[in-house]
Amino acid sequence: MYNNLDPLLHSQLRLAIVSILISVEEAEFSFLQEKTESTSGNLSVQVDKLKEAGYIKVIKTYKGKYPLTKCAITKKGIKAFDEYVANIQRYLKPNK
Amino acid sequence: MDTQTVQNLELIQKMIKTAQRRFADQSNFYLLWGFAISLACIIQYILMKINSPYINLVWLVIIPIALVLQVIFVVKKRKTERVRTHIESLMGKMWIAFGISLGIVLSFAGHLKENTYPIVLCLYAISVFVAGGALQLTSLYVGAVCCWVLAIVSFFVPFETQLLLLAAAVIVAYVIPGIIIKSAYRNNQDV
Image 1 (cartoon, rainbow over the protein chains, first blue to last red):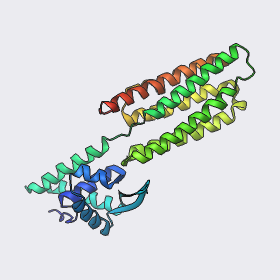
Image 2 (cartoon, rainbow over the protein chains, first blue to last red; image 1 turned 135 degrees about the vertical axis):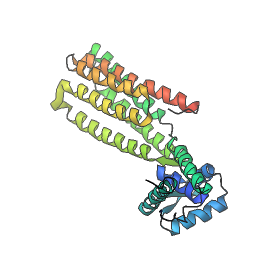
Image 3 (cartoon, chains in turn cyan, orange; image 1 turned 45 degrees about the vertical axis):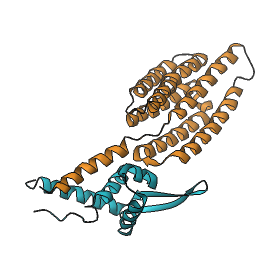
């Protein structure tokens, strides 16, 4: 009736990260932390998982003297997110 | 129905809204160019009235100063921005395209003669209209319509009067929306 939901996205924090990144070109780590209301440790672990899956890319740079981490969604991430949303919709409205 | 699936759908909507509602305060750019161009037009008009030999000097002084301030604002914005939305990125490209088009028109002003400023006003109208759509700001739409109307009028008036019309257009299309954007940003409201 419906496809299995992507286990990588079927987690609240990872889904929140991808949902933010799908709406923007790029976002700083601190912005993601603030909007997802997560700890830096937990966020860092989930960001790494998404990066390993190729769903997001992580850009390490500098702002003045300080290191800065930015995240952006990849084409693979956009496709996975679209499929996840389509599967949820099918799941909620199975007759369609 | 799986509760987590429903919660996830709500989470997606919440996160997308959170990210999309953000707009960096870009009022400085509107105020800078609005004041720079209107000031240059008014000074040039006065210089023409008093038959000064330095009528074009005002642009050679004011525009480089405005460009330096523009670079400072861009560097400052890059340092403070934590997220860049697709709309902001698209707007950046639109302003680059506008700058190139404006540069080409002004470079060939000798060929266009008294048609230069009406064409410049049309370029202003396009950029301000698109910005109005991106920021959902009525005052920018009003500014765009004002630029189009003044562009038509400019085809029928002498060069001196065109200067005053250009000054009026940038005050309506840049300065007033700039003040509204700054005020909305300070009050932390959606513009």
